[in-house]
Image (cartoon, rainbow, N blue to C red; front, side, top):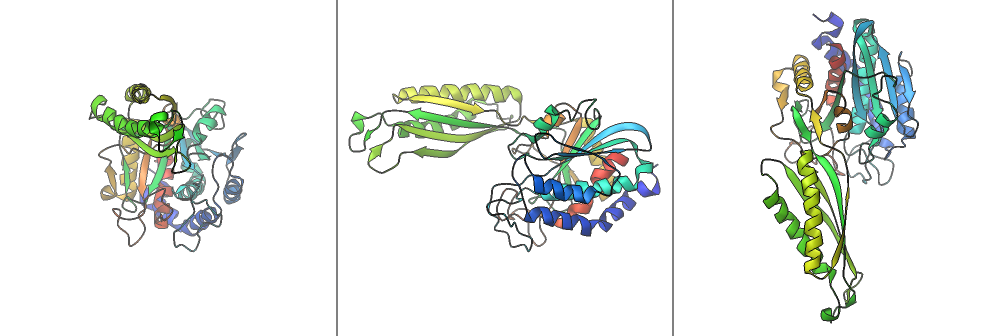
Length: 401
């Protein structure tokens, strides 16, 4: 049985007592958001918050990562807890008193809450060090939003036996969602988030006067035909039970109304839930674009930039996360996602090497409905700060209980 200091109700109450400090950190980060791998202001604010704790701190070499290691009072397993720290290149349009002061940059995915939750969890764990068996590795990671920050941290030795905290036995991460009921936790075993690849196609024809298309080779109809052909390919070539999304999100061609351009460009995203389908669809994209271009007397250069792999939760770790969340928050506040989410997450790199799980923490703002509130990655998104104690307590409980 857990000591009274680590009992779920006691842990949650202690987390609530840290709410003012955690909110202050969250709002400081929200006002000064940073994008990518280099987050000096974010790192400095975090280090100031952790300064009085008995953590062994390690700073990244090629990125602004912070790893805090806490040794328990007796031997046990090593648990990695991760929070991402970076913002997005969006101009904030949310009516909050602590809105972003950096033009064109905002915390639109809740990573500021993640940092605040894990920093509070660090404090909870340090206060209960005598109840901790093993080691906790607190990972504050930059560059989740497309910069492969987790992969770079792994390349710097995060998961090695000689790394900052040694080889983890388990790894966990939480992610807030504005479109899930506030304070509720959702996860699922197996694939939970998609692999994401970037598609770029350049169609080349022969430019000419728009009034005489027979003297030119117009790449625009070829590009337009590709969009439809790619969607047909997805519906005809991919098993309907294997979730796959291919979205062409940008088409660009020409400079003025009376000139047929020489080139047209397509850009989009491919989301898949299995590596086999991912590779097969990549090959089909190449085939469809090449032959559609040839049918229009054009050529196509197809580039597929590999993004994050599928995020796969370990079934046993997912069960443990859900069980701990139920003990902490109650059965009614913990659920299982019926289907994977087609967004992508670079915690996938960690879960490919260490058994663990990712879970979502609902943070729909007060007075809003999860069904119509602005979602993550919107410049109008708002999050419910009152979920920070639940997230902090859950992080801590995963190491303690």
